[in-house]
Image 1 (spheres, helix red, strand yellow):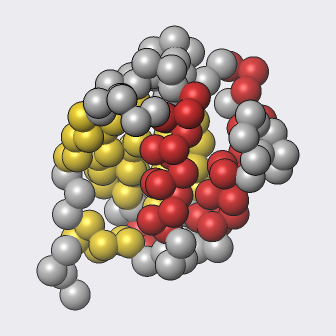
Image 2 (cartoon, one colour; image 1 turned 90 degrees about the vertical axis):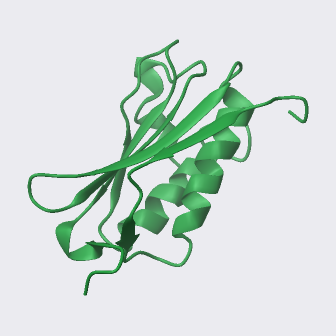
Length: 129
């Protein structure tokens, strides 16, 4: 893993999110999974966009191996996986504390895409009151 060079690109992240204090650990876990399981990851992109209801959709994408169709829901189950089997399970639990959801919506062999949906009452633009 140490010899991998990965570009991190961020877009449109001028938002504040009301979430569990472990919210940042979710992104650490996603990045760890990209490195461990993505095989050929060279780029990770994190972006955000407002949804029609005023919420926020945060999208974490990598250009690695992706997640097979039959594993898209299994990856969030306790004990599933090649490492501890807790990472994505705990990530989902952390997010659900504040009504935030996560799903994997990428294409196998084209990279992983995790969509984190934040409800309107839990997000604001930086600097707004």
